[in-house]
Image (tube, rainbow, N blue to C red; front, side):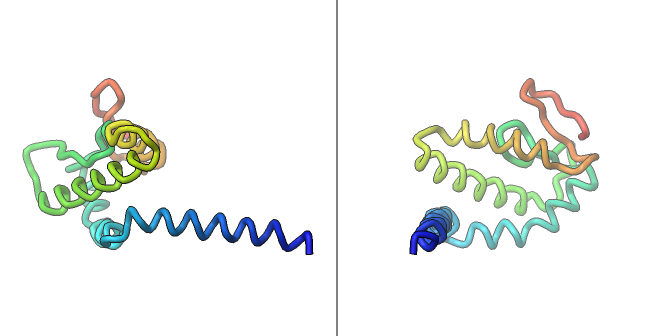
Length: 123
């Protein structure tokens, strides 16, 4: 019976983590973000957008195709950052900056990334 306590505890912890995470995505944010991903990836591949140092997408020139998609993505990111900040008792700006660093690390080569100092470079 003792061996069952640990797996049950792990299972309960995972359930709680998933349940809490769903609160952020309860209004369909996750689905919307996934649906926009192909457009975002294409715009990144074309060099038209990049990831700024605040955790948001930003146009890199005068052309702004699919601006509605980028604006919607940034609005959903803002909602996610706000929800995470409330749970972690911090600010949405801090969450966004932290997320920006994570995104920069994982982004594909050739993607525009804004450094902490505000300068842009291709990864």
